[in-house]
Length: 309
Ligand code: BDR
Ligand code: CA
Image (tube, rainbow, N blue to C red):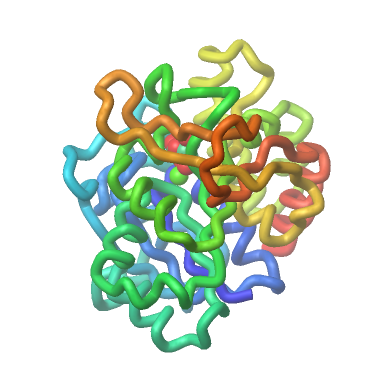
């Protein structure tokens, strides 16, 4: 399966990229960086660090949009640290950025590849994706599916009481993506909050004894401090890798085909994903909204895949 990963690394984005690069079922055509957890220069740097860590300098990394469609950028250094990949000392990458803008890469790739053969995997704010749809509306029908991490219903918000971070940062972009009529799988907090980095799971990853295992365990050890304190849980949700996991093992997940609308206007609830989980409206379903994951199955797969790198 051909995929493009659109991302704002972020430790959990980094683990998602590693999982994808470790999986022979997936052909990562390119990685497009967007501003989100940290500013664009850092997310574009971090994506290349991750490729080098996986020994995959051949995967092109493109820099994309440096700010949301209409708003100022909101970042999350309070979770991910100043670099976005705090937790372990990492050298600047040697591989250069690929030439050209991430949005052009997305558009050109979708126009070049057979229709319905490329899946987009956004792990951050949806600015690059919405910009591509705006610039070249013809790509809409060529996208196989968008599988994204974002939103929440029962878990509600993590950056405000009502909103999840990725959707909150660029709600106008999210609105455009959810309204585009493209097959959509949404991995919300409802699902990711069930996949916690417990001590035993971290130990198993550290115990791989390879460089990737050490780095991933250092990353999870760093960012989980914030959520453990906030939620009083024994670990932190490992959000973004669940997008890749769904591509590999959809049988690990359950969810519902429902209507999901994005609130972009209200100051109080901006970025809220209004998910009709109970089917109380007659609005047409536009997304497979995941609600649960077999967390042990997911971490077993992740650990087994990271061992290959
Ligand atoms: C999302 O926000 C970011 O901090 C994470 O990388 C993830 O994509 C979770 O709300
Ligand atoms: Ca992310």
